[in-house]
Image 1 (tube, helix red, strand yellow):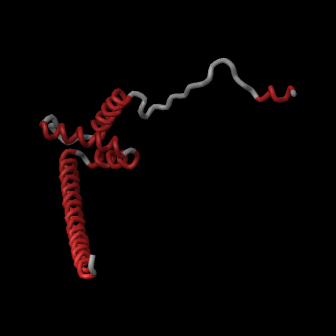
Image 2: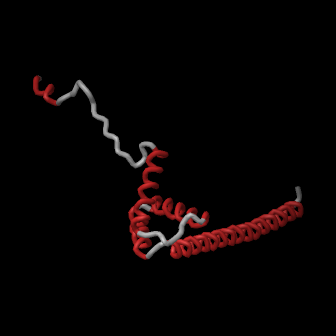
Image 3: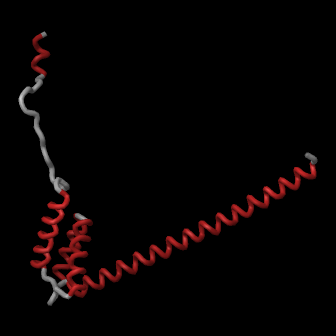
Length: 140
């Protein structure tokens, strides 16, 4: 190969690399735009959820749900989902009180306990029978 051929190959390769790096920037910008759109969509969904909950919960119940969220996020989300489902299906006639929220929380807790089995439950299993004590070492 001559020097001219090598220079042409280098120029072509350099152009190819520049296109790839420029294209990579475009792709990463597109991914960032997609992530921004997803973030905006999540924010809109969160705003819609909070608006629905503000309409169906009394202030005391909303406070309790907020405290539940601080302790266990997943339980609060489950309760919110159930409340929103009840509201959309038209089964809620009036705003939910704190006592009604407690009942709903109990129902959700029972449901998750049945589904999860041992999830959230601590099981202690102890050895039965032959205990190996360190007293045996004193015999020597």
